[in-house]
Length: 299
Ligand SMILES: C[S@@+](CC[C@H](N)C(=O)[O-])C[C@H]1O[C@@H](n2cnc3c(N)ncnc32)[C@H](O)[C@@H]1O
Image 1 (cartoon, rainbow, N blue to C red):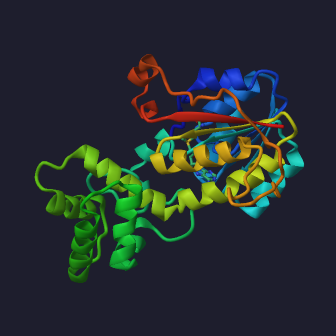
Image 2 (tube, rainbow, N blue to C red; image 1 turned 135 degrees about the vertical axis):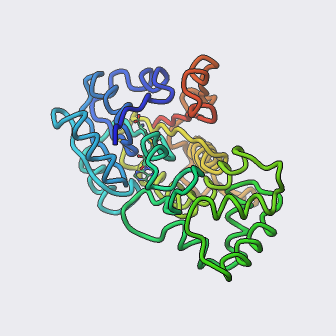
């Protein structure tokens, strides 16, 4: 698999990494941002859940100035590596990489005949396992919460009806269920949105992110930055909410007469506003379209 990947929001990330000494790239992917960090003179710790991404990054970037860890950036072993590394910059560029999307056997897209896999790591339940085994109410929640689907309950019911006849096995099975519910006018945009919803559930992406952000911030040196690029409204909501809460001096419930919390901000948003790709970047790289970068600077 060729692992060439144009890093999203490369200039903004470069701006945030000026003077950085020790950077963690928690989502190494094609190694695009890591290459940028190395070129800027930083020591890098590259982490990815996907062993194929790590193997390709080793081939592309070698071992000079960079160490690797295969695993979830929020797992105990990864957090331990990160703490020991004493980073002054941590980057998360969430979601899946172009090579993962392009690999037919991984089943991340609705390309005909792809297996319903969608796992970023090599273990755990596949998309087929989820679609064939989860209770109808769980499927409805996945399509509603992660896919913003108005007809989530009908789609879940349709999947349960179909799987009683034969288990869903390929992308076509999911596409046909979507078409049956959304009608003949449904198209690639709907398939992409609903496949993404299943992928987020298969990899438990939102819970992983929400749990990982606090210990990642704590692992940063004073003055260090945590930069997160999100592609899904659910991801960005988690980042926005936590970064705002960390920026506040007091997080006590309003009913408390006197402040009993930390009483000072943990840092600040820098810049205050999120950064989005320019029209030129989106034209050159359509996958950057929904990207939002938020950066938090630790006190
Ligand atoms: C958008 S790509 C990153 C691209 C990379 N920044 C580049 O410039 O090439 C996201 C990568 O993060 C990995 N990933 C997603 N969630 C992860 C997690 N919780 N822990 C570790 N890796 C994760 C995916 O396997 C994928 O390779």
